[in-house]
Figure: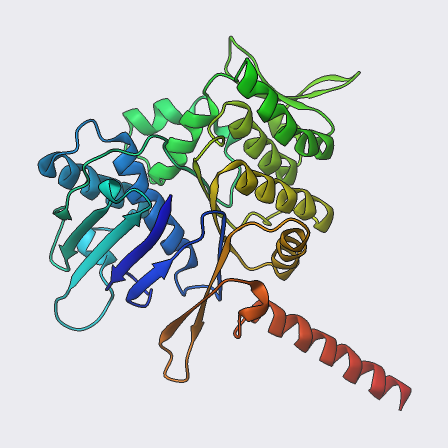
Length: 347
């Protein structure tokens, strides 16, 4: 489990310690304040620890540098350092529940592709994290993997990572029974099951009594649900794993957002540490309501601009404690505008 992260001079994010819950972690804020950068950074460093072939300083320095560049796609590594006049140094550290898995790295503004490992972990992560972008990726299977591996294409490596996970075989045995319980509400929402053709490796939605529907013909919102369902059916999102999801609500109607919220909470109760970045007050409220019925450890990180246009960070343990929530402010402002229009019409 990831307990906290120490950030100094990384992109637009305020320097300091970011603490996380064992269950649900939610990052909120306006565009451009660093929500996605935060969850992508955490994913990147955990992914390196999980996938590196050897935990030596030389190997991790190379792997961290390559992964940061391939996930964030800057012109050079130093471009990830907070923008200001002169030169500076970015310092990043992860504190894990098992302190033998702690990691600290740093790099400077002038760094093109060089990372310094300041604290070397003694133990690798058992399970690799998964990252879901705002776009669904099932329709990129199976051609995206070979394309990314053999050509210089401008896609984030997190997409390649997730496409690879989607291609894993489905579970069988006792773990498949656990997965089936988590899949039930998602399959109900989709009206069928996600299946893969063994010859072509393409994904389909198996509809009862109607046969298979090609995944590109399925509505994009449903494809996002199908992507989550696939990662559950392969066992990627079972037993002490990590899920990072950027704006789960994208292209989903409120009914489907409720299904996604319920699935997120179910994953947390299964032992998955979930990190999401969102603009949706509807999703936030749904998660809050579900947590009241059956509590899970949770943490909310709110990013906002102060009067000097500097990004500030608020960290609390419940939605109700957030003092700056743009999604709620705009919803209330919309209600006020509606009341003004109604008053003017009546007058």
